[in-house]
Image (cartoon, rainbow, N blue to C red; front, side):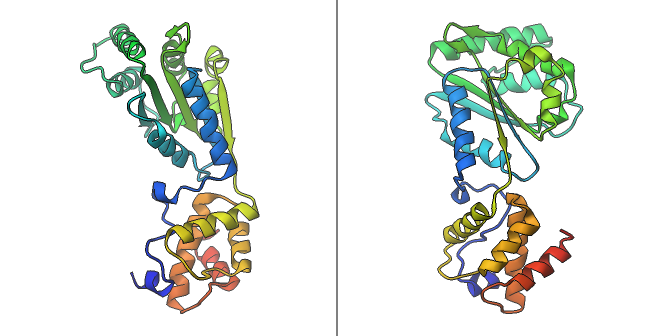
Amino acid sequence: MEYLNFYKLKAYPFSNAIDNKFYFNSAQHAEALLRLRYAVDTRKGLAVLVGEIGTGKTTITRRILTELDESNYTAALLVVLHSSVTTDWLLKKIAMQLGVRKTGNTKLDILSELHDRLMQMYESGIKPVIIIDEVQMLQSREIMEELRGLLNMEVSEGKLITLILCGLPELEDVIALDDPLKQRVAVKFKLSSFDQNITHEYIQHRLKVSGSEEEVFTPEAIKYIHIYSKGNPRLINTICDNAIFEGFLIKQKPIDKDTIDSVAANLDI
C-alpha cells in the first residue's frame, strides 16, 4: 500500500493479528513465559495467566506453543467462544487434542481414556500441555470440578497434565467456584499495561521489524499515544495504525501530537 512506501516500511507494523515476528519480549512478557514454562517442565499441574483486554495474553499463549518442542511436549490451545460449553464437550476436546482417536459417550469413559493416554505419554517422556483461553466465560462449577479431576491424575514426579488457564481478571472468580481447584493453582501471573518508556520501546520495536529507518512519530506523539492507550498494547497498535494512515493522507513526516489527538478523537478514545 502507498502509505507503507511513504514511510519506507516493508510490512504493516501495527496489525493486531498475532505474528511471532513482531513479538516484543518485554520484561513482564519474558517473566510470564518463564513462569509458565516452569509450571510445564516441573509438572506443577495448574498455571493461570490473567490480564485485561489487550494486554497480551493471546500473544503469550501463541508464543509458548511455538517454544514447546514437539519431540518433548504435546501442546494444544482451546479458545472458549461461548458460555454454553459443557463438561462433556471440553473433556472430549482435550482428549482429542492429546491424541485419543475415539472417545466414549460418558464422562467416565472419556476420563478413563484420557488417563490411559496420559500414562502412555508419560512413559514416552512426553509432557502434555492444554492451554484454555477466555476461561472467564466458563461460569460453571461443574467444569471447574472436572478440571480438578484431571489434575488428580499424577505420578511421583508430578501431574500427568499441565493446564494453563488464561482470561480476564474475572477468571479468578470462575476458578474460585471450586475451592479445591483454586488451591491447586501452582503458578499465577498477571499482565499489566506498559509504562511510558516501555510503550516507546514497543513502538520502536514494531517499526524496526517493519523495516523503518527513519523517525515515524515525534517523541511528543509517542507520549500521547501512551496517554490515550494507557499503555495497552492492543490500543497502542490501533492508534498507531490509524495515525500512520492519517499521516500519509496529509503527507506528514514525522507524525505529530495533533494527528494523534485527531485519531484518538475519531476512535472515541
